Length: 470
Ligand SMILES: O=c1ccn([C@@H]2O[C@H](COP(=O)(O)O)[C@@H](O)[C@H]2O)c(=O)[nH]1
Image (cartoon, rainbow, N blue to C red; front, side, top):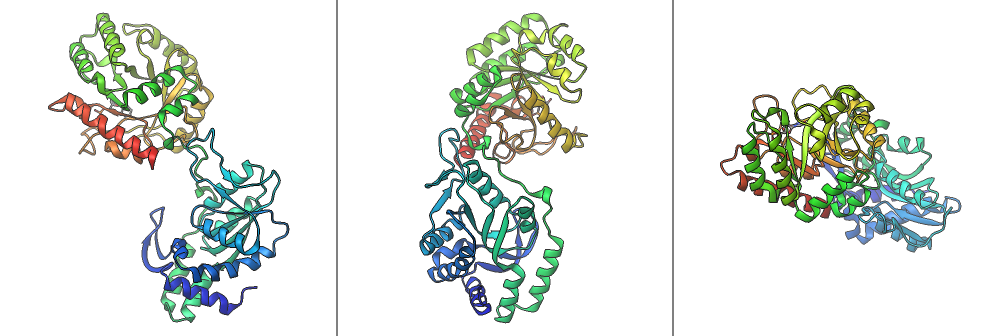
């Protein structure tokens, strides 16, 4: 059992090295907190590392039959190392990012299936990092029922873990830590009250726990994701993006056939997809299609008709194959709404790639979170047909074979006069998960559309490279 004096001395050590700070701090989820704990600094203070080890060792020894220790990356890895050296228990290491997920090991070290592994953690708020670690250890056949913890922030994480069969053995709670610091004269009683109020108002609910998926498409380069694509047009698009080094889709929202052909010819080298709204052309004639296809072939880009099919399957089939536009004869890709269910997808032929609309860029859209997640389920039920999803947020992270298409991209503007909402090229790729970004008026209304296309292409591609390297 840790003595009160030992704990108090440790609390003061943490305070002195600035591992615990008081004031107004913004948390990861944007909420303000009066107390901030950054235990990463501990490694620079061997005396504090020693105290911490002395506090954790008795708790570890009290656990029955332990085969290995694994620190939650990264802060708890040196803590687990110290415990391993002190107790002679073997240590394992979990990789946080597995970019080559097909080949790289998730867990480093020597172990066998069924080994009992104790997870070591410095701080628990929601418990999500521990859940990610136990998921990866269990994937390798290890058993992880116990966690050795330094500090419980008392925001519900311990109960969340308990519900999932994980027992946490902690050294200190945040309330105890403050009490020791008050007794030692490091902070006053007011801070204790502030903390009490903060904890009462900031309990994390079960459904708020977010676990980063094992496979995260945002970290995987297109040339690797192509191996996961089931739809042949998605395969083609991944290859085009990787070889041409562009993830720019031009929304060619012009109403004149010749203007579209001229623009396609000029910006062809910088785009991977040219998106049309074929029904806005005032002079549409079937002679338009052949040259458009030839330009697309020559410059190696795909044609996406943004028809947003949204009727019963039979009508969509007619709209797709018949009428004056005969979309199926030239479009490599089409968009469809999920509103009418799977009939729409059954009505489209499998040589096409479909982008299913899960979210839109329009302000005041009636699409709800439930609609979006049902759309993703529908997409997953048709992997041979679905090339990807049209959305505004980083969704389907664990489906690297699908492509995220994101419209609403413009430099220097936030809206238009009819409810369109824009983000910058960097933001949509790095923060919103866009694989391909759709740019319309940002290019077609620019003084020099070719230069604008080059600029968008460069910004989007650089952002994608930064994303996969970060
Ligand atoms: O949610 C959506 C879905 C589709 N679009 C289409 O993208 C372009 C955007 O054009 P801008 O000129 O860049 O605003 C346009 O063809 C839309 O129909 C979208 O904007 N939002």
